Length: 212
Image 1: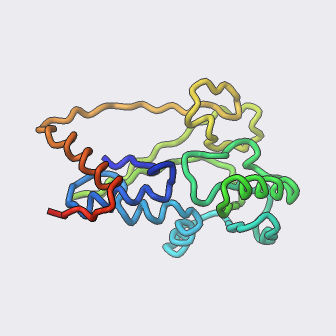
Image 2: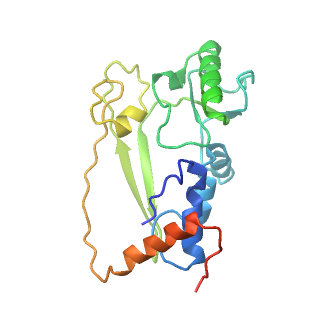
């Protein structure tokens, strides 16, 4: 199952794993090459969704802190790294109520991460994750993230702490809970270790592998 989120610390290289698996013809589940390629550009994904008729928040890509916010985008806004996932830098300062707060936030993120910053009008409401499983029949599963709304002022969203730090007790960063069921694998798994070894060898080497 392809759960790769980065390679050698670079999120944008995650697409190399399904690419290698496709090339050496190893079947896998999870995100494919196309999905992994575009998903690390949040602004591009937004535009594709918009063209497909899916409603999206008013958004703008900031390449530098001195860029002016589009007048069509009203405060409060939420800002995030355009090319990095995992909730990195998603905290209370992600919400800006005016130009001064936004400029300070953009300056910090641009200086540290050296990538464009996606700014969106903040939409108060429920946060739902959609998981799509494709195969003989496509199934879509929805999961709502439930937050502790105390002291949040209605600005509820998944922060880095709420996703990854189990000791978080802040009401703003109310922990997310999930019910997990493990499905046992039935079959011959003797091929797994050797395949993983070959994949690592391919990633660390300079030669193009034989697809056979």
